[in-house]
Length: 181
Image (cartoon, rainbow, N blue to C red; front, top):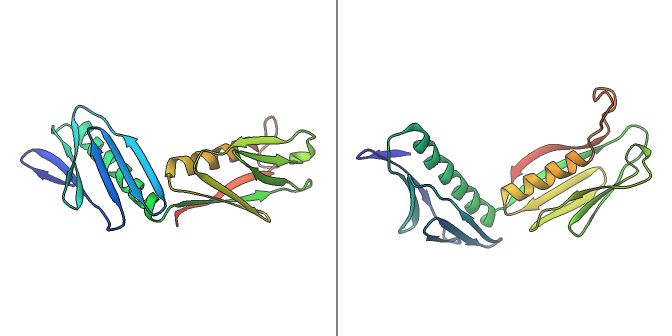
């Protein structure tokens, strides 16, 4: 981040394989793994395309507006990373007595035999996200970091145990690793 004549700016370089369009507050990023679009609007921050870079400009010296410049730049960097390399989240299925059976069925992740329950628990899989189960490992991949993270949180929340001591009853599906691919 740099300061030019009282304005705070952050410049994001665009890789060769990526196309970025800036239309007002809407930023569209296209790459080998797909297309992402996001509205980043604030009256104090402008986003402009400058050759092979996107520049985020803060119009005032206030700390809150400087923070918005960094936030918007991070969102754009995550979008570029998502359409070029993608994001991945790994989870682990943990059980003590009742073996948990988990499978992805379309836009729903189904967890069967959790603590011996007769009815399966379900978690929503966000659009554009792929979930794979292999043994006790669950792998979630996608190009949008927020959708990958939300899917992992949905699965983890679906196996939350209420009314029992979590130090003793540790059964569930837990996030073990978050990373860009």
